[in-house]
Each structure stands twice: as structure tokens, then as C-alpha cells.
Amino acid sequence: MLLLRRLLVTLVLLAAVALGGFYLLTDPRLVSPAPEVGALPAPDIENGKVLFAAGGCASCHATPGQDDRTRLGGGLALASAFGTFHAPNISPHTRDGIGNWGIQDFVDAMAAGVGRQGEHLYPAFPYTSYRLMPPKALADLFAYIRTLPPVEGRAPAHELRFPFNIRRLVGGWKLLFFEGGSFRPDPARSEAWNRGAYLVNGPGHCAECHSSRNGFGAIVPATRFAGGPDPEGKGFVPNITQDEADGLGKWSKEEIAELLKTGFTPSFDSVGGPMAEVVRNMAQLSDADRAAMAEYLKSLPAVATPPRPQAK
Amino acid sequence: MIRTAFVLAGLGLGLAATMAQADPIAERQQLMKGVGRATREGAAMAKGDAAFDAAKAQGIFKTYADAAKTMPTLFPETSRTGGETTAAPKIWEDQAGFKAAFAKFEADAGAGAGVTDLAGFRAAFGAATKNCGACHEVYRVKR
Image 1 (spheres, each protein chain N blue to C red):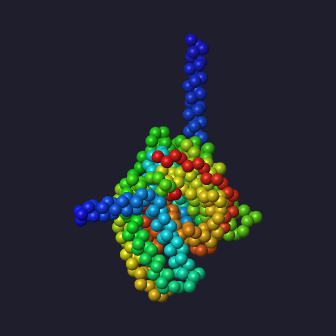
Image 2 (tube, chains in turn brown, red):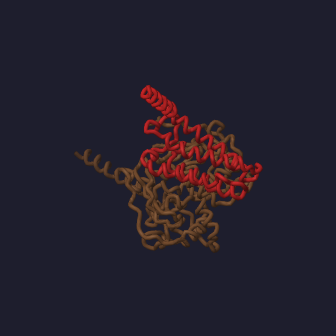
Image 3 (tube, each protein chain N blue to C red):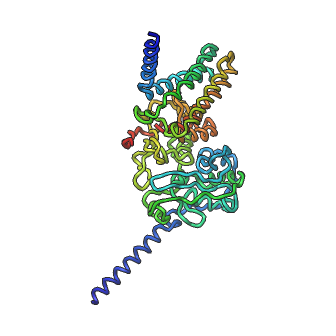
């Protein structure tokens, strides 16, 4: 009897420790501390506009069904294996958008995937890439977004299956798969290469689609840039490493920059699906920025395309 | 006699139509490759990498217009999948929009049918090739 009671007490204690540990380990601020903003110079709104285009913010956050890419009312539905995500309103509307946010709130979201209530954000929002933007760049972007029209109305809540609807679990996901920190230039490389690496990996978040993901929806590092099934389940996203067979191995830098500007491949095929929208965004960058992205992409080692799932 | 001839002619037409439809996926891919070749030629002229040639320029728009006319007929229900097609299901869900997109492409190509100078060509070529990405965005999946 005494033994049984001891066993019971031990079990309860263990469960409490495990729960406490889980709670502590998945605490948003603990798992993913955001960089401190500190004192920053006056924001450069023009740079913010460039980052807004490079980041493709409007592609998910612009209100669907209208042409104005600066009306960020949200609402676009993103289908996934976990359920449907709805991009939120990020217009400067004080009630429904981010009009009440301070710069630290914005940095928390972009660099650490933490929302204003201190909650985890789902990585369907690619903070896994955006975190490479340093606070100064994020402040520029934030300042630009604040010049855009406030849009009323909120997007519907995400419709996720159990257990993915438990936000705390994103803390565990972050422990396993999220790496924080701003972009660190490689001094051994040229300025253009570093600019390209920053644009491709940071705001451009190219790898978010041009890679394969594991069962938890995290990018499999070995397939980074090597292509993979479209996360939304429509087709296959091409390999953009230097693979000769189906990557960019045979493309010149000029041809890559051309695609980013006009959407035409070297054989004058025109890219479709969501890449058409990406091209509209990239077309707003300078020729120098597109050339820098090409410079970086040409330096990626060739990786064979992961096997395609069986056609249904 | 006349009736037999009609029937035979009808059969012949039917046969020709069937043959044309034998492999619509391969056929539409070939047609699109032709459009790509024309665009390559056009881009070279528009950028000044090749000399402007009015006959060639008009030929490009004719290739576009012909393709725009034929393309919508090459997507029968039976060709949704197979042959590494990148056709999106949306084509069959929204036939009206799909056909309207080609009608617009044909009209934009028609606007360039009589170009005689480089400036006119650039304008018409730019307008016509806007259709490529716009249509692929909706009616094509990633390869």
C-alpha cells in the first residue's frame, strides 16, 4: 500500500515536471528570443519598399480578388498537409492590422516568429527566412508598410487539424528546426554574392518552396534549393541548384536575372503558377539586385532533385 | 452515290479530327514550343540583339494568333493527365476563363499583325507576351 502510494506520487511528480518542462521549453520568448532593436537611425522607406517587393509580402497578405497590391487586408487561404492557413491583415489598421504595433513587435514576428500576444506564429509565415533581415532592414520595411492604406476586417482563423492547432507545439518545432540570427556576410566572397545570398535566403525566401519538407513541414537541409513537391499540393517546384539535369547548371547569370525580371526561361517558356507572382515582385528590384541573386544561385553546389511523389 | 461520298467525306473528316486529337498533350506542347521559339526571336529584336525585320515581326504575331486559335481545342477532358503535362485542373473547371484568356492573347497578337517599325513592334510584343505569364499563373502548375 505504501509502495503503491509512493509510486503514484512519483508518477504525478514526474508528469508535473514533464509538463512544466514542456511549458518552459516551448515558451516563445525562451525558444526563439528576438534580437533587441535598440536605437536605430531614421528608417529608409525606399529600402523598405524594395524589401517589401523582395519579400513578396503582398503575395500572401494583399486582399485577394482586387488588384491593389498595397491593400494588405489578408485573407488568402494557404492549403497544407496540416490544414488551411489564412494570411492575416498586416495593413496599418489599428484594430484589424498592425497599426498598433511597435518596431519591437514587428521584429519579434519577423525574426523570431512570435506574435504580439507573445504567441508562436506558424512557420507557414516564413520567419525561418525573414529572420536573416537585421533590425535596421526590418525597421525600414515596417516604416514602408506603415505608409500603406489601413484596411478594415480580419482574416478567418487558421483551420488546422489536431494537434497542429496547439500553438505551443510550434515551440517544440522551433527547438528542432528553427535557427535564429541575422545574415552574416562572408568576407571571402564578393559584395554582389553577399547581397544575392541575403536576398535569396532572407527576404526572397526562395528555399521555402524550392526544397522538400519533412513530415513536420520543415525543410530537409539536404534538399535545400533542390526542389520538391509544392507545399500546397499542386505540382512540383523546380530544382534551382547547379544540377545539370534539371537545375540551373546550364543557365548563365544573365538568363537567371532575365527570368526574375520577365518570367522567361532561356527557351522562352514563361514560368507559371505562383512563380508568375514572384516574378512580378522581383521585377520591382534593381537590375543589380537581380544580378546579385543570379551570382549567388550560380554558386550553389549541384544537388540532385529529390524523388517525385507518385502522380495521383 | 452522292450520299456515299458525303458519308466517306464525313468519315474522312472524323478520322482527321481524331488523328489531330490522337495526342493532344504532345500537340499542345509542340505548339507552345513554337510560341517559345517565336518569342526568342522577338525578344532578340526587341532588345536590339537582332536587326528589326518587319516580315519576321509580323510572322511572330501570326504564330501567336494561330496558336491562340488552336490551343483551346487541344484540352479535351481525356487529356487532364499524362505525358508530363503541366496543365492545371483549373482549365477544366473554368473553361470560360480559359477560352477568354486565349481570345485576349489572339486579340493582342492581332494588334501587332501589321507592325512596320521597331517602336510599334516593341509595344505590341510587350503587350502580347504579358499574356504568357498571366495565363500560366492560373492555368498551369509547377512542372
